[in-house]
Length: 116
Length: 109
Image (cartoon, rainbow over all chains, first blue to last red; front, side, top):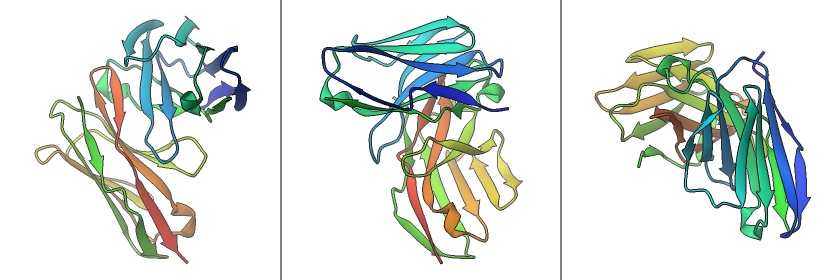
């Protein structure tokens, strides 16, 4: 089973709203990632969690706030977003980001976010 | 900053032909290399991983890695219209996974 589940699949939010994206995996993976993908562009790394600790924050604005409540769950809290934040938000997981042979990453289906 | 470069395409091949996709990377310390397929509007799907120099075959797909030249490629034999997608090369860095810009492949029936 290589399933990563993301909810919701689609989200429309206003610029003053607060919303959260959720990601879940039950593969025992200890690394989880958030990526942002704009149309016709590659996925752009936002955050990496390794063993439930934030290991990488790629200079993401504070209106995006990640959270890793446990080894299976990853959230992305959204607040005061801008229309240019509209994109496909992808969650991924891999067995262990520190061990190069265990870094195969599997993606969820993504959340299509539209900020109005 | 890590760099992963691919020809953006589009690359068009007739059905049944071999499609060849190329990728170069800048970080000599990279140790893991992946090819993902992404259909329009969908998420990336892992199709191949390669860790050592040489070739790795899986069905119609062959990945090739040359660490000295910092080059990784993907060959798709007997291309099918269902192979039409964007192919993303990905390379691991320190606690990270970097993507190239992708190559758009179209297989013409």
